[in-house]
Image (cartoon, rainbow, N blue to C red; front, side, top):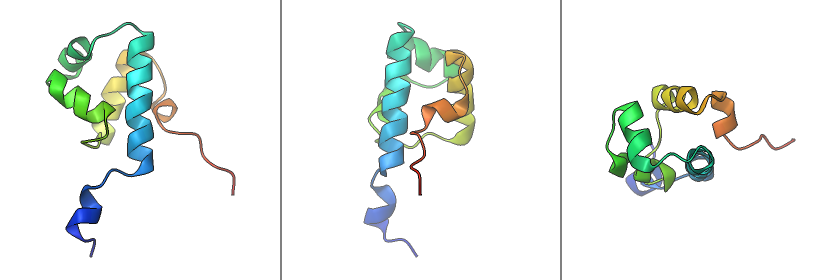
Amino acid sequence: MIPKQCARKAQQVDIEVGLNIRNKRRKLKLTQVQLARAIGVTFQQVQKYESAKNRVSASRLYQIARIFNCEEQSLFPPRKKV
């Protein structure tokens, strides 16, 4: 069982996904409000995604990728070679 405090802490991948969403949104010159309306959430929710306060679900990542006209995997950090 995962302790509550561990389950709530953002993982590195969550932080990087949020930063990638922010960077792509800014590159497309979209505001948080515009992105939020396009995916059906509040701009505060977009803020939480971008700051990794809330994790982004797979279906929401799919929506965001469609709006950004990119592949979903481009929102994730590159894989490290093992």
